[in-house]
Length: 308
Length: 308
Image (cartoon, rainbow over all chains, first blue to last red; front, side, top):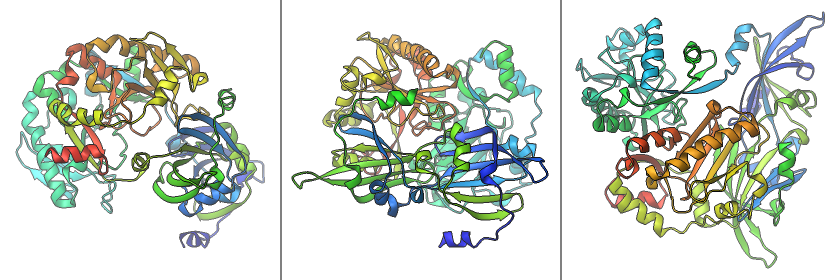
């Protein structure tokens, strides 16, 4: 039925997909089987215009899998070991589909939006933090007014799920922007601390344990009460580097593969608390790994310091 | 070139893919364009055996995208609005590929492994490990013959990327099953250690630092040499719980959002080494978090012990 609706969509000017010239691959996602490409089209008068093409393979349809296995064109054994084997199979065209999204004419901004940046891992020692990262953070004037607006109830006051008003050990829990709250599968909330002197994981010491304990316990309880999701089905973590330097904790549904929950960026709150319990200065001693994109100015600082 | 190597792989007994009967869909991932199905095969004597089939569409290959747009079979405009439009396109079979992984014969355990389940987080103390997890592991008899086949060159010998033959501090580096080696975007290799007495992270002590250092350094060098991917673009980590209890280390492309690289399951090799350097018994002291699916017998053990 959904397909019929789509087919009945209003038809605009058709894009000459077959004659597009590929300029470059902007980005691709091997996991999602998607590719973002910059293409060029030559118009009737010979003028060239830019386009972004997003190609994506479609998910399997359960009812067609058997047919797919029966009617494959070419099949090739690739590897065999014990009970495991892998094959390559060429499906017939009618059982194979690619979705193509076209942005045309595309501006430079569209192209930049989809362009992949190379990412590098940094292994930041405490000295690196003091000499490179901290001066960089201090030289930036990223506004976090939106955080203060929430803490002061000047914005999003009606979205607050829970608050502990203590100025030192309190926090506010709000749904993350990315979550539309329509379904629990991608549940995503953020706890913002009231105190304003903790930039990131690197500032945490044993002094902050009561605050962290409140976030862990009250955050879990509030989410269970409000959304019915038990604490054992929540992934509770901090980012390093964070995207803004006012300490906050992420709560996401465990079954949701949330962006930014990879091991190279996320730190489980419970691990952080255990680290601080065993060594109050853990985060002023240990090396921390994080990814930086090629266009991020902090990467340049690390490169200039000969640390990449 | 890498593809030719794969084609030259030794051919074992072929699985009758075309005559498999589908019993049910165990799980599917719309995001990853993958489906996990339970199939049944009827043997020559009429006996039925179970199989798990994992179908996965393959990532796009950059050099074939233009051809794909030019040579599509059927193309259909789906939606058009301002500068945006979407199309469905049926690719010719030779530009379309599905990877099929077969586990056959499959046991009930294999079927359960791929069946979608609710997931819970466990926070395992060292006492939990000794009293619950370790006895459970010892009571199981999941075969790891396929690991020994690789270590003894009885299988996949032509796939070995690097080997350090030292029986104590050596290892073998091979491409993971999940990677077809056609593109670097989803690069995925596994280092399997030669010694057979280290089940997981929980067994690691400072004694294993030379082995871990070899894996980190030689693994990075071999991947850079063989595939041209620099070490700073690799995510190098262990799983806890692992899917098999013979210590192994994962190497994945940093830009690839690999399954199992989430903070609740992955441990960066460099963090593991730093932990062992500071405290030889770190992994015999600290609590570790990991997810367990509702059907995993280990969860039941934790529930019976009142630990969930």
